[in-house]
Image (cartoon, rainbow, N blue to C red; front, side):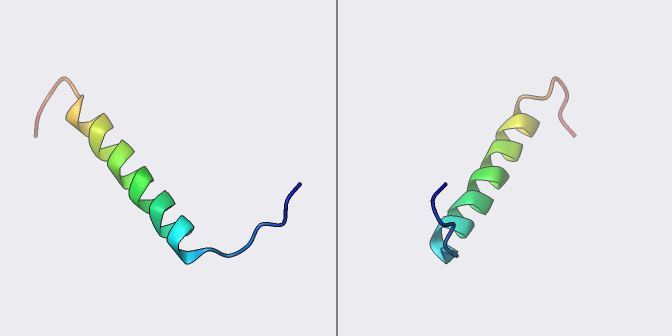
Length: 33
């Protein structure tokens, strides 16, 4: 297992990815608020 280094850009990218995926999921909901 490789050493997990603290990479701010990687963490930020992961957070953005999670936010985008959540947004896409909400966009695909059968109803709109």
